[in-house]
Image (cartoon, rainbow, N blue to C red; front, side):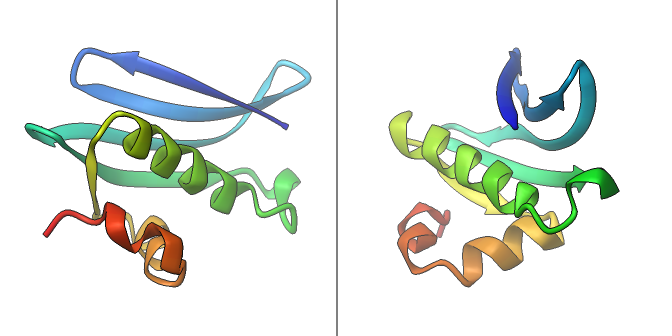
Length: 94
């Protein structure tokens, strides 16, 4: 499973591709200076049980952390993952 990060001006996505097939994505946008909002996460049924969604959220958190950004999660899945992961709590925008 390969996760690719694509940035297009004020929007970005982390995509999962396998064998040339698009199987998942997490999308975000820059919502304020120093802040991104994760608004969508989707994973193909083919990746069921592989924690692909969790891996996408982890990639977004790692990106935010390494770039000094805070996160707002309006995507219910991403919010759930961030809320249940203690080491992500410092990444939430106040």
